[in-house]
Amino acid sequence: MDRNVIDAVKLLREEFSDSNIMGMRKLGNSLIEVASAENNKLLADVALIAYSLHKLSSKGHISGHETWLRVKGRVISSLKRAENALEKDDSAGFDKIINGIKNDINGVDSKLGYFVQGIHEKARVKYASTAYSLGLSLSQATDLTGASKKKVLEYVGATKISDKEKSEFGIGERLDKLRKVL
Image 1 (cartoon, rainbow, N blue to C red):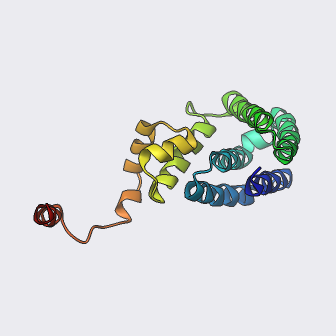
Image 2 (tube, rainbow, N blue to C red):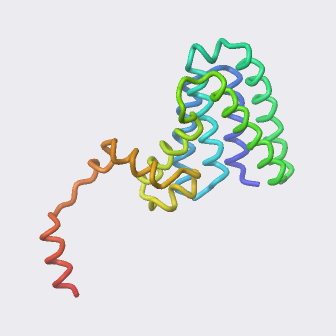
């Protein structure tokens, strides 16, 4: 199994155990960059979980709740089991454990969160737009994260991501050059 994924799960477990909120956020952000470059869905899943755990941990009304404390213990244990599954090259076991963590995240968010759109779904959209801004096509970015194309386009349209790169030439000049080539 990919050593990068094993190391990422281990680091996430450590950051989450230590309640290192910014560490989880930085880890998620760096993992989505690597996942985008390598088209690695496993790393993207770990990045999404890191971001989701970061968001839940940073909300005072959630992080102090007894339900969260129980789920936190379960997630830490699940991350350790996910590491072990990867070490044994058990991808089916890993997927099952990761899906269990996602269910835990969605359950806590649904029970204790204030918003209709879940944190994990927001993470998918945010990280798909990040992957898109790193050069992946919209389809590649949404396949990597499982986000809806429509929601990613809405998100990108509401950000300044598309403003980062300015074309050297206007549309008219680009069309003229294209016509000359053709």
